[in-house]
Amino acid sequence: IAGITQAPTSQILAAGRRMTLRCTQDMRHNAMYWYRQDLGLGLRLIHYSNTAGTTGKGEVPDGYSVSRANTDDFPLTLASAVPSQTSVYFCASSDSGQGNGNSPLHFGNGTRLTVT
Amino acid sequence: RKEVEQDPGPFNVPEGATVAFNCTYSNSASQSFFWYRQDCRKEPKLLMSVYSSGNEDGRFTAQLNRASQYISLLIRDSKLSDSATYLCVVNVVHFGNEKLTFGTGTRLTIIP
Image 1 (cartoon, chains in turn green, red):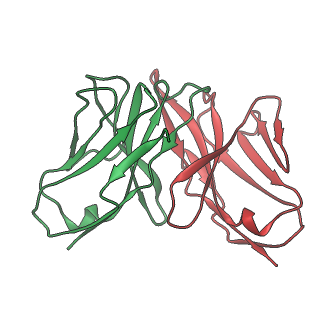
Image 2 (cartoon, chains in turn purple, brown):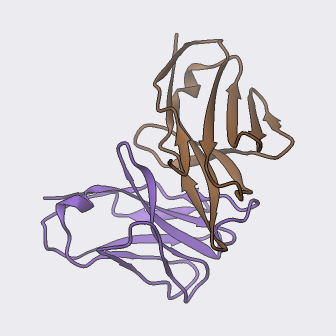
Image 3 (cartoon, one colour):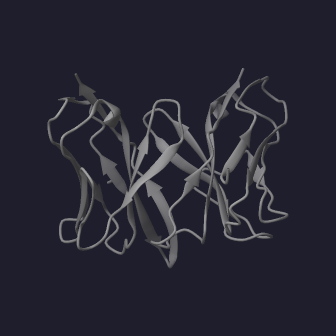
């Protein structure tokens, strides 16, 4: 079934540890995104990639890095996790970059991360 | 003022009733508008795009009011399965760069 796969589904992580959240899509979408969702704040964009080989910063990029070596994969890395990074993380993709009215977002089923 | 603003609710509505909620946006250059639905502990899923002329999909009607800068979602003959959080999404344009911005969501509960 075509879609976006995120892993892990959930994780408890000690502060200071490094963690990579995985995201893979098989829809051949050009653009991919990482969001975090926190109660009362909605979804906030962390990083995005409009096409393989390029990345950009979103609204809340500090403490996170991404890479886009190919079309399908867009991993998100927390180099040294802090408790404020406790959140639900959603990966998403779209056929083209943000702002195209014909290209809504398709989301993965999320990763619940708790940093202790 | 927030770029995209929604009444968080909750809206508690009896089954079969009609319910409507709005979402206001601050960027007059916005061109793309969507409604997403998010069930508890699940990912957001596209409910419908919002077109300038308004559009309908079954029991759901979405409308855009550019003059007052808001979009609306109307649900007729509400079902228990309509209980969810509804997210408004707007593309916000800053200095030629566009990004999709999410509202915090409106929580809807349909009561039997």
